[in-house]
Every structure is written in C-alpha cells, then in structure tokens.
Image (tube, rainbow over all chains, first blue to last red):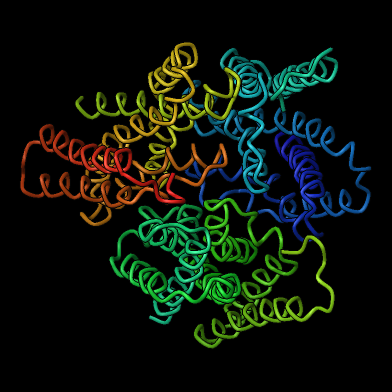
Length: 203
Length: 203
Length: 203
C-alpha cells in the first residue's frame, strides 16, 4: 500500500519534471504529455524488465497512466514563466529520484534478489526515467552532469536494504531512504545555485 | 500467417523510413543498413522484452533480418533526391506505425495480457522503432513532435482489442485498425503540408 | 572461467572507452565514472534481457561494478592530452567489441538458442555498450558511422558459433573470434587514419 502511494507520488513528480522539460524544449501539448508519461513510467518499466516481471506492472494498472497524463496536462496549462522551468525540472527530478529509488529497491527485495543487486536495481529505477527524458530531448542526462546523482541514489537504496535486512518496518525505512536522497540532491543543487562563481561547463 | 505478413510488411516500411533517415543523416552504406535494421526490428524486440518472450522472435527468424537488409540497400541505391527524403521518412513511418501497432497489440493479446496492457504494448511496439531511429541520429523523436502520433496508435490498438473481445475475426479487425492509424497520421501530415502558415517550431 | 576473464577484460576496456569519451565530453569525475560503468555494463545487460536472465548477471557480481569504477577513475586521473582521446576511445572500443561479441555469443549458445540467434545476440552485446555511450553524450553511434562495425561483430560471432557446432574447444575459438573482430576494426581504423584525403563527413 505504502509502495503504491510512493510509486504514484514518484510518477506524478517525474511526470512534472518531464512535462516541464518538454515545455522548455518547446514541444506541443501531445509531446509534453508523451514526455511526461515516458519520464514517469520509464524507470519502473526498466526495473520490471530487469527483474523479469512480464508484462511490467506499470502497464497493467490504469492509474499508472492516468496520473502522468493529468499531471502533464496541468503542467502544460499552468507552467511557470520560462526562466523558472529549469529549476522546476531539477527539483521535481530530485524528489522523483528519491521516491523511485526506494520503490525500486523495495520491489527488487520482494523478488528475492541479493542486497547488492537490489541497490543497483533501485538506483537504475531512480535514474532511468530522467535519463530517458534527457536523451529524448537531446540533453546530456543529469546523471552524467550532476556530481552526486548516482551516488545519492545508491546511498538511499543502501538504507532501504539495510533496514530490510535488520528487520525494521518497511514504511519508515522507505521514508528515511527517500528523504536522504532528496536531501543530498537538494543540497547539491542549492550549493551550485549559491556558488559565487559559476563553473564554465557546469549544468 | 496474416500476422507474419503484416509484420514483414511493417518491417519493410520501417526499414525504408530508417534507411531514408540514414541517407538524410549522410551515413554510409553500412550505417544506412544498420539504421534500417534497428528501426525495423526495434519495436518488435521491445514488444518481446515487455512480454517476456526470450529470445525475441525477431532474432530467431532469418527473414526478419533479410527483409530490412535488402530494403535498406535498395533504398540506399535508389534514394530520391534529397528534398523528398523527409517526406518519405514520414510516409513510411506512418504506415509502419499502423502495421506494428496492430501486430504488437495482437501479439500481446495472444499472451493473455489484459485489454488495457495490450493497447499500451501495441502502442509501444509501433512507436519504439521510430523513436530509436530518431534518437540514434540525434533528432527529437517524432512521437514528441507530431500532434496525433501516440494517440493514433492508441486508437488503432483499441480497435484491435475491441474486435478481439467482441469475437470478430482477427484479419479484418487488424486491417481496420492499421488503416485507422495510417489515415489519422496521413491526415495530420497532409494538413501540415497544406497549412497556409508554417508554425515556427513545428517538425 | 575463461568467459569471466574475457568478460571482465571486455568490461575494463569498454569502461576505458566510456571514460575517455566522458573526458572528451568534459564531464566531471562522477559523470566520467557513470559513463564508464554504463558503457562497460550496457552490452551485458542488454544480452541478459534478450536471453531472459533475471536479474542480469552483471548486477549480481560486485566485481562487475568494481572493475569499471576503478578503470574509469584511473582513466580520469591519467587521461592523455585531449588530442589523443578520440583515438583512445576508438582503440578501446575495438577491443571491447571483440571481447563482448564473443562472450555474448557464448552465453547465448549456453542458453540453447539457435546458431543464428546466438550470432545476433553476440553482435548486440558487442555493439550495445558503445551505442549507449555515444547516445548519452549525444554523438551518432559508431556502429552507424564506421564501415565495418556491425559486420565485424557478426563475423566474429559466426566463428564462435561455427567452432561450437563443430565441437572445437571453447577457449581457442573464443580467442580466434575476438582476434578476428579486433583485427578487422583495427585495419579499418588504420586505413582511415592513413587515408590520403579525409572524406568530408567521416568521423
């Protein structure tokens, strides 16, 4: 139950980041919605393919499509002025990374994979949708450009795995893991935005 | 049987769209053939991975390789003057989208997935090859730029699913579904080509 | 055993090509490492997904992560002057193509797929990581730009399959297949570098 809520929340925020990126790339309504859906569902589909879940659970439950469609349309209609789009993409991406890494790791553990594999699959789940989004609009994926992106996901996944192995209840562990990832990413973003001198090729 | 014919026809037209796109991107013979193959087989491989068909059926039947190789070579040798290449890519892509969405949906139904899932997997099959083609030559995929692309595929897939659920014979339903998708796409292309004023960022 | 050695060697050289490409694309340390890992593990993960090996073996053995991380860090610290980077990417890519095609083909044969399928899966394994690398840094993949790239992989895979079907011992066959691929690629590169006049769009 908690997993579904976290999953749907992650889908909504990743859809937001995808739709904002689509608006930035000047796509039309349909393009924005398709990019929102792809960003939102990409990570979960990659996760299910890696775990051998056929067909991917994301393609079996209509809520998993409804949420990103509605989110993307709302973003398209209400999107903020252009200058703030990039920041919005980054913030939504940070939250989505946290939520998806945690649900990816938890799903992997539920399929009895080793701890190490669960961490990697969780990380891939968190990174996948955003990487697809960036490749589709011809940007170099964030995970290659942001200092502490993959590592943040790995840290959060490790928290979830450790909690599960120590027998902690799943819900608070998941929340702590996701919060850790979001916090690391937000600090990294905040530090950059407040850096006295912009580095030449950053972002 | 009909499925194989539709599949091979779809492979030929998608290979045509990939090879024409490769000529436009100024690839050499080998590059054009590889792009033709990737465009032609990409959607089917994605479909089989999502459905858990291992190894993908496309990789087990030599006709599925022979058709795109021959098609791409013919396109390379006979390709029209440069100005018409883009239109050729779009036309071939429209027909391929129709055929692949229908075979993808039918294959998914044959693997006993729910109606909803079959529509989505059919749409992904139709969209996948063209998206790969565009990403590989660094263009923003058509599905993000064309107003009625994903929706056309979804409509055609819905026709196939509805026909199957109502017990209609598969062959005419498949033809109607494919024709619907191709018609929607061609009308969209025709309207754009005949639009009095080109929108700034279209295409 | 030989398979693991060839696999880890292939991972190290593909990580080298990915890390060098990352340095060329001016990524920071983390980006270089992530690109090195993706290039090194991409082909094997695609192979396992196509063969239905869940979760991919690459994600179950920590050595498969340690090798590309260390390799990428070493490349980042010691990378040669910029002018030589492109040549380094190409050389490492040639060796990686040879090793991965052979291990991919061998793994496919071990999963009882037909000869034809084994060749194609081997080729995909060899090509996959490099294609991912190039797409992620927004270059047109080598397989589309180099004359004898996919064909070299196919030839090497055919040697491995033929050797296996004729009952030859696996180790020497693998070495011969890999050597064939690397030789073909190196001759192609050497011929281009020594060509009297550069063709306009060759890279």
